[in-house]
Length: 221
Length: 355
Image (cartoon, rainbow over all chains, first blue to last red; front, top):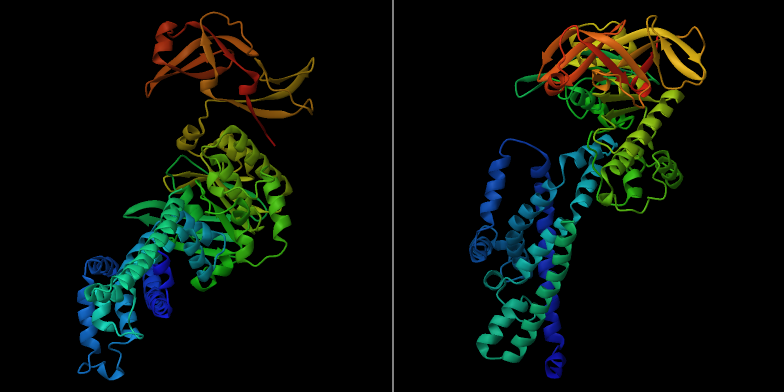
């Protein structure tokens, strides 16, 4: 145990931090699209709304490796976006993870916003809320399920391996994250590092699970 | 703020719920929409509060036609408390302060304390609003609306389904506001006596239309249609002189004297209307010994079957109408011309002044 802890050297720490940086950035960016979209879908009735919702729900089922392939094809040198040189960089991983998270967060946030009753919305309006005060109220009323949506998205992308490997390349010191490192080290037979990272990843998932349970409990009150 | 509507109509899925509503809400007065459930009272209040758009007609606020661009500033001058209000998922304090916060008004703490005192919930600031009882929710909702001091308050069935204590607290509060006459309030109710008690002016609605407006007591005296008479349940309406004997108050109807609840200030010549719900009168074939103060002997002159009940009219010098079940009628062997005794409590007599 002591050996394992002491092996938390610079390399391991770098890998862990990079994992968090990539996945948190991916979540933050997908929120920029997901939250306004789900708010719109929850509050406004416009033509095409149902179609968009069913598209999002079917996107939930798309395997991550397919997203990896699409991102790869778009970023590879010969592709239109190839000139940007993003393939095998952190940004490629962020893009892929962000795309993976968008349907998850959108559909969970949509459910969260929809759980705010019409009466609550009208109470805010009749008490004089402006548009942005109204939206803040919707966020506040759905805060538990909303936080749960973000955590679910984060847990999904930080544990993603194949797709991240495809577009990130698992380059040491540059795009090597926890999951890709574990896969590689295990295959190399270097179990010490694999287990260390595995424990950390497991701890992260468990630590994410606790607030998630609490939030879901609080939301159900 | 003056509110006027011109021929407002509302259609939901092909069903017309409001027809041709033209009215002018009096400032600093309490107006009341009265009618049975499903008559369009709620929709009308929601339209006036801009929560619903009318299908036809125009609304004028301070003489100007409503335009979408003014929505927020107009909305902030009025407020609606719904029939089943809901609370934000936070403390009572933050619920009541909502309207103040969005308007960036100052002195929140003191105003909230006053507002909670007004609805008799002092010290409840830190309670989670989701743990309140139904009556408390209604009262907090009222505090949350009135704390803003809106120019117009819409109260939809403010005592709907409430415990007696909450009902009394809310009625007392509205009565106080009625006496102060400094706020414009529009409320709705299906209870005629409440309408008469709480408001200055009553609009009687039937199937989405206003069929009569004025003071509630005028409806009693001159119902505009058989519907208003029926809805109002006008069966036993008497006009008489108030008199006092040995400290007991009576209404002298000429042939009869009815004992009424004690009144403090009575001028001898005061004329009043009294009404009595047909359900409040007991029928018996023998004189009753009871705590009820009024008992008269009479003769059955009319019997009519109505929706499983029997409506009986007995002449005790003046005619009284009574409602009883068919079984009671059979048990008492009631038939035309039979001698009966009618008994009712003094407190069952509802008084309205004739002025």
